[in-house]
Each structure stands twice: as C-alpha cells, then as structure tokens.
Image (cartoon, rainbow, N blue to C red; front, side, top):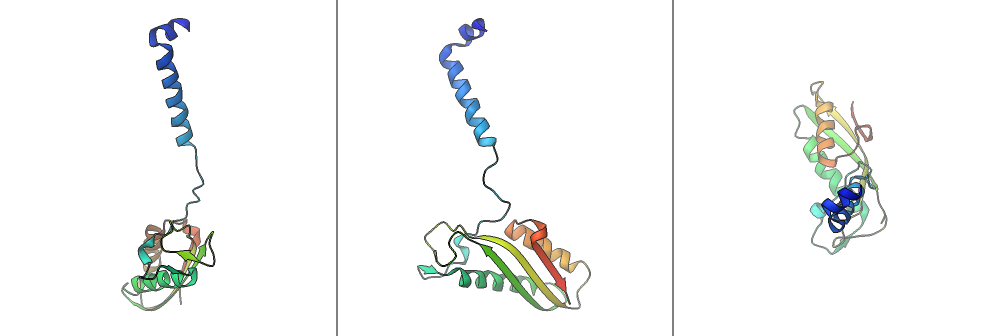
Length: 138
C-alpha cells in the first residue's frame, strides 16, 4: 500500500479520492418523482397568473391535440396539478408545478388503437407514469 502511495503521490491520491466521492454523490438518486416539471411555455403576457388558469390552458392545449385524432368527435380533458405554490405562480419563477394525473374522455368513431395513441402522446408530453393517465372512450 505504501508503494502505491509513493508511486502515485499523496496529492494525486487525494484528488482521485475526491473525484470518486463526487461521482458517487452524483449517481445517487435525487428527489425526482417521475412527474414532469412544467415550464413557462404556457405563460401569457401578464407577470403572474394562478394555477387554475395555468391548468386550464394546458387542458385546452391537450384537448386541441386529442381532437386532431381521426374519428374523435368530442373530448374532455382534466389535469390535476401537484404544486408547492397552490394559490399563486409567478411567471418569472422556475415553476415547481408538476402534473399529478391526466384524464381524457373521448367520443366518436375511432379505431381501437386511438386511446393507446393518446396515452403514448401524453406520456411523451408530460413524462409522467402511465398509471397516472386514463383515456376512456364512451
């Protein structure tokens, strides 16, 4: 062991040890819960808005996307948010609002794969777990 320290040098050995500790600490799982963080993409010109309006705008955008699928005559979308700031979100803040779940009810003459396609689209958009998405045809 002393031969290794002499060959490498004590300073280099400390640097290697610190690098190893940093790599290990970076590889540890963080607070990520698998839900997506929302960005300011949906913000309007006002400096702030409430989470209800924010959620409504996202629901409208999802509904417009769902209505573009072949055979869909009508669609209702409900999105639930999990937020640290439930009453007021500032557009200048890095939003801590996360989507908790998405429910979509579709009506029309669509093929049997359409609900799966909608689910896959929502998975890609919001990066939430599949069991938090429900697409129901009536």
